[in-house]
Length: 142
Ligand SMILES: [Zn+2]
Image: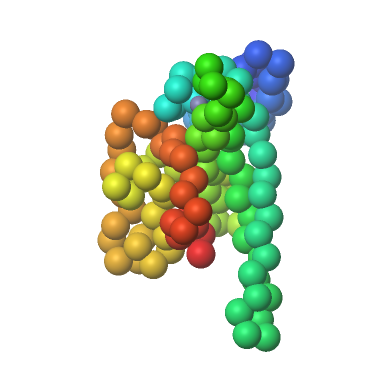
């Protein structure tokens, strides 16, 4: 079975599933990943999907990290950009399936790999996963 899902203005996703259950799961995933409508901090609808790639060199080893996320483009009356982000994670099953990271550590950022391994993946909050990037804060997947 195939259906088209309108998840946001201007975004229609084609999804497929063998059974209704699979199709429902695909529809839910399409809404979760592509259906962001508002910034969770300022409420603006002026949000864009972005893909950041960060390469770090540690000794002789070069590592590249990818950060799919939504970024808020809204500006306040003084022209300052909101800049809030909603990070997306990748499900660790080689399907390339994304999901929005709704839990934050201290309400500020997604948990690092080390924090998750230590059992601290953060908590849900009124931010719904939206946060402002802080220069020296660790990144989610490092
Ligand atoms: Zn915002």
